[in-house]
Image 1: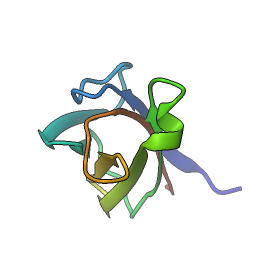
Image 2: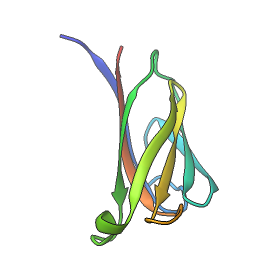
Image 3: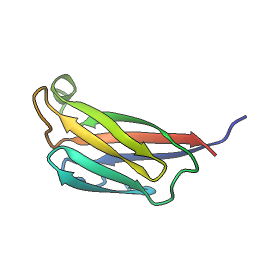
Image 4: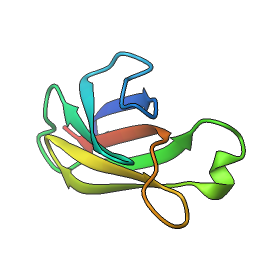
Length: 96
């Protein structure tokens, strides 16, 4: 059976983690966040993100994981027209 390393997080709209984990986050532009793993993966992880916040947000907001690397990835949250600050959750996993 394949073993996996996993890092999961919950982040508010300001880029502050709402739970501690093996990562840090910095907001560097409107709706744009850098997630950095404290311990990089040994290979490229699969990353899934979801919007976190008010129930209506799931209908109006979107979230994308881009620039995925073993050391981290960039998250962009947006409304239908442009990037907007919003909370998100993520899971990153890869075989060890």
